Each structure stands twice: as structure tokens, then as C-alpha cells.
Length: 196
Figure 1 (cartoon, rainbow, N blue to C red):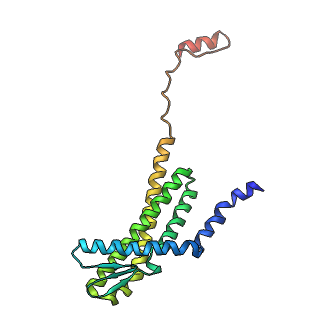
Figure 2: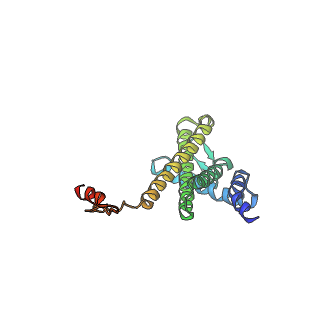
Figure 3: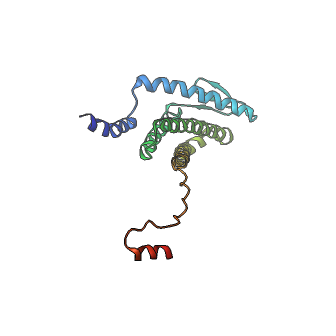
């Protein structure tokens, strides 16, 4: 029934996140991320004094051209960031507004990390030639995934500590001890209470 459906909703949906996205969703994301990433990297390279020009998904450098293909578009990093954010939100039992904040943090870190990967590979291509990009491509991708995971986990932990601080109420002030004990019984007990 409904209780069991709610209980197993997260594991079922979480497994779907790891599956390849439908082409109707994947293609627009890739076609949007790749040209934007190439354009942004080219403009930052110009700010660093390196001639660069973006043309669609290609970054034109003085000594070579660097293509931002589907694997470098950031889609896989984006998908991994979503999985990490949803998993942490469920493990910490965050409220829904907090979960939205963690997803936004993971997506922002993923996009920033993908820019750093493309930018660093463009610098390597400019300095050492296009053959060096092949050697560093997988290392850069793995490093960005580790960075995305670490920053998302750190941000989630800070959110958790903040929520815990607000949830804990300060202890109530201790009341003064009573001046006399409410004793019942014979005169001997009343006398003992008076002596105490």
C-alpha cells in the first residue's frame, strides 16, 4: 500500500538517478553545457593573456584546438553531484528546504569543478601540446569528482551542525532548592527534617 510505497520511494528513485538520462533531457543539457563551458574558458584564458577563441564546442588555441565533447560537457559530474546530494539529504534526514539547498550546492560545485577541469586542460594543451591532454584527461576528471564530493559533504555537515544548534534549546534555569522538605509522618520525621 501507500506506506510501503513511501518507504521504498527513495531507494527506487535513487537507482534511477544512476541510469543514463533520456535523450530528450541529455541532449539539451549537453548542447547547453558544452558551448557555455568552451566560451567561458576561452574568455578566462584571454584574461590570462593567452589567445583563445571559442567556436561552439571547440576552443581554438595558438598551437592547437581543444574540443569540449560530451564526456567533458559536465553531464556526468552533474549526475554524480545529484546522486551525492540526494544521498546525503536522506542520510541526514534533512528537511526538504535543506535538501534543495544541498542539491543547489552540489550543482554549483559540479559546474565550477567542470570549468576548472576544462581550464586546466586548456592550459596544459597550450603549454605542452594536445598530446599531454590525453595523459591528464582522466586524472583531471577524477580529481574534480573527488572535489565535488568533498565540498558537498563539507557543506552538508555544516548545514547539519547549524540545524542541530537551532534545534537544541538552552537548559532551563535551575530553581532554588526548597527551604523545607515536605515531610509527612510522625514527630520524629518532622524533627529530622527540621534539623536537616
